[in-house]
Length: 418
Image (cartoon, rainbow, N blue to C red; front, side, top):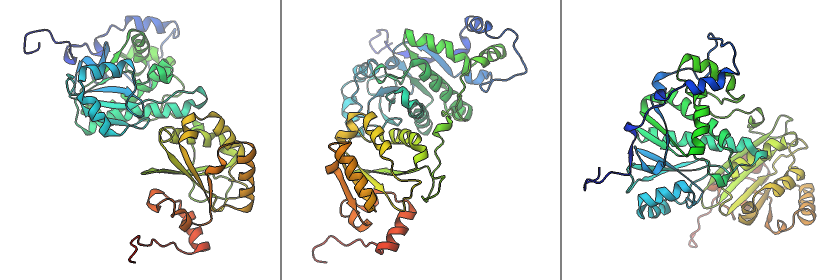
């Protein structure tokens, strides 16, 4: 009740039944046809845990109406997305929310940021950005979506929140298949509660009618309500159930990081840091071009929404890790327009005569519009006239090579009196 005695539109989560309280009869019937004789001695990787189930609530309703410590808002990188969840949260929170969001200066895909709840019953709002889904780069999307749920939970833990109300983070316009996304959501929450269950009392999944059907179907896989349901659900688990924290595990994503190039087993090394500009350093190996492509998309998708710069180190490059023009062509063909529009320059460090000729041919006859953005840099001192050294995380071998070939670089004071 509000102060005037009128019924409150907000819903107290303590009044909602926990997952333990839902009837499991229908769930068991749906799985019995697949498992004739349950092997009760075989345990699921998500075993029956009554204490964890008591923390889970599945509720068909508007997440903005939940009276809990924090609710989750799904948005875009600029936190201005107009989807059903965000619009409802903005409407109930009031105009102060938009003003506070401006102070956050956006949010990267997979990250989570916190604001007050203002006029909501919830004290806080945790804003996160789900990935845009492309089937060809499913692994990158899986990793980003996992990061959304994990970072929300981690933020709740750090802020000592007792309850969190989740919307379905993957918005319709971002195209993530609902059932695939639900698997990631449920197992990430399950693994988090296994490790940090003492920090959270309630986790609410606020869903629509369509989403409710999927959640009711998949919840028994990750939160079985009895030993029998655990057994019947076991064959229905997907092949990839994630690691100990629920993070997707796909062999092709296991990219090794190598400190020095030049050997056949070198795959890819990436060093990323974003300040006034964003600089990406990549070393690629031809046998692993597809993995490099996935890695580039995963790392860069949230960065390319703003102006950025690429620094490519050609240092000590051999036939094993020469930058492949086929990789660049494929990359240019598949990335969103924002990658091309917001790319301001590519600094090609330590180029060879062969690489200059190849790059000229490639940018002249294969990709138009890129040629004027290429800048050849013979040494690091020359690079630092364009980009301050503190904005780049250097592979150690690059610094060693440049010091050996060109001598150590010096940072000169900018004062005209010196």
